[in-house]
Length: 223
Image 1 (cartoon, rainbow, N blue to C red):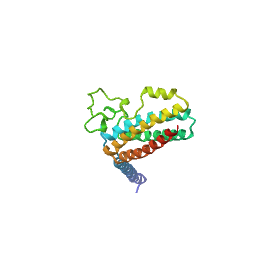
Image 2: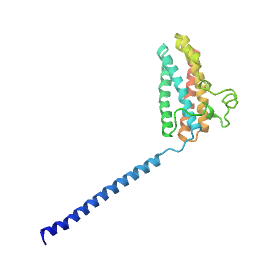
Image 3: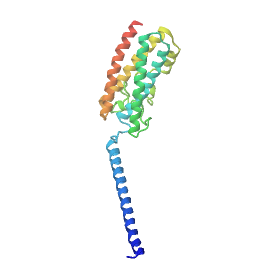
Image 4: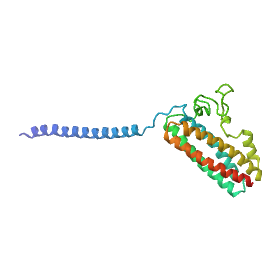
C-alpha cells in the first residue's frame, strides 16, 4: 500500500471516532438535563390560587406578625421587667422567623407578596368581613387596620411614648388582643387552607399564641 493511500484510510477513521465522542457527550448532557428537569417537575409545588386561604393567610399573617414584632422590640428596649422582656424576645424572634417562611411560600407558589383581594377576605367563603357578617363593599374597603387584633396607629404611638409600668401594662393589653386576633386568623387557616404545610403551620401558631396569651394574662395580673 502506498503511503498516501494509508493516510487517506486513517483520516476517515479519526473523523468517525470524533463523531462518536461528540454523540456520547451529547447523550450524557441530554440525559443529565432530563433528570434535572424531572427533579424540578417533581419538586414543583401544587398550584395555589392567588385569592385562596393559603395565599391570603400567608400575606395577612405577615402583616399581623410585623406589628407584633414591632411592639415586642419596643417593649424589650424600654421595660425593666425581665419576664416581660423574655416574652417579648420570644415573640419577636419566633414571628420574624415565621414571616420568612410565609414569604418563601409565596415565592415558591409564584405569587406576589401583595394580593389583589382585600385583607381577611379569605377567612370566609362568602366574602363576609370577619366579625361583622357584612359583605365586602357594604362598609367600604377592608384595610390592614381591620385585621383582627391589630393595634391602631394611635395605640402604637402611645406605646412608643409610654414608659415604666405603664408601658408594660399597655404592651400586655395590646399583645393579648393582638394574639387573640392571630389565633382567630390561624384557626381559620387551619380549617380552610388547601396545603397540609399551611394547615399544620397555622395549627402550631394557634397552640403557641394561645399559650402566650395565658402567660401574658398572668403577667398582666402582677403588674
